[in-house]
Image 1 (spheres, helix red, strand yellow):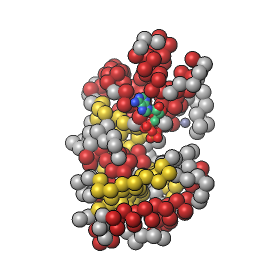
Image 2 (tube, protein in one colour):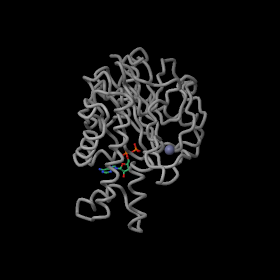
Image 3 (cartoon, protein in one colour):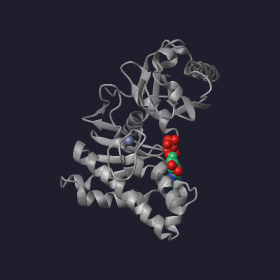
Image 4 (cartoon, rainbow, N blue to C red):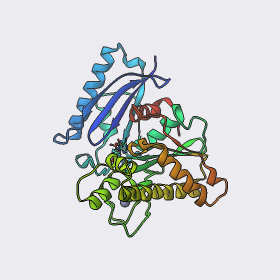
Length: 305
Ligand code: ADP
Ligand code: ZN
């Protein structure tokens, strides 16, 4: 059997798995991302976990096609480096590909995690039939993977799709990137919780905000409506820029489901410039569980460049 080793690096945990050419996860495990040790030590732990997993499942070196790695950006896929992700400060300028090659002789494919997730939606998810689409993740931040003309659009260093830093409302406040009112500063899960906490004067999560709005809390309902409108504004910008066949939306905040999709479709139907763009299908991501791992494995199993 030809397996891909998938590695999905995150700020809190790193998921590792063996994935077959149909996307089936044969085995998986997760390591806590330990910020007290050097990333080389984390890679040593990943390698040990991978070798153990292979032994447990009688997967030999000859069965492995390669290693796919998804990681948060900014990164540099030309150099094989994790450059400057805000949640992985100890990993800045870390040569992840070279570090993995200390342990394995396989091909290593390395992309931004949202880019990898877009490829997973093309491979097995909500965009199987699309040659032009954008996958948007609305979670702690906002990111995107862009698929155009049947290929991933990666940019020169693998950072294409950092749409979370489109400026949406310059009056809103200063984003981590230094600009005013970026999309993720006004519409991510973090942004929803921050704005509600300011209004209510107590700590709330974005999930609670949606629950309060659904129970009829007018202030929270107004906040949710504003956030949905901002999500619509960003989607219109993507449609006007890329003319995609569809938008696929995933990430924790998208779990709220139909109210979000209905609001975004409504906004797009009124404001996309091109009349056909106003009818762009906007659908939920299909891959929820193991999406990061399957995205990483897709970098090996799918021809994307
Ligand atoms: P990550 O950013 O680490 O990939 P998620 O995609 O789960 O994680 O996104 C986390 C964000 O999504 C948090 O702000 C969280 O409050 C929000 N979130 C998670 N689940 C839900 C839900 N069911 N409804 C609304 N918001 C949610
Ligand atoms: Zn920003």
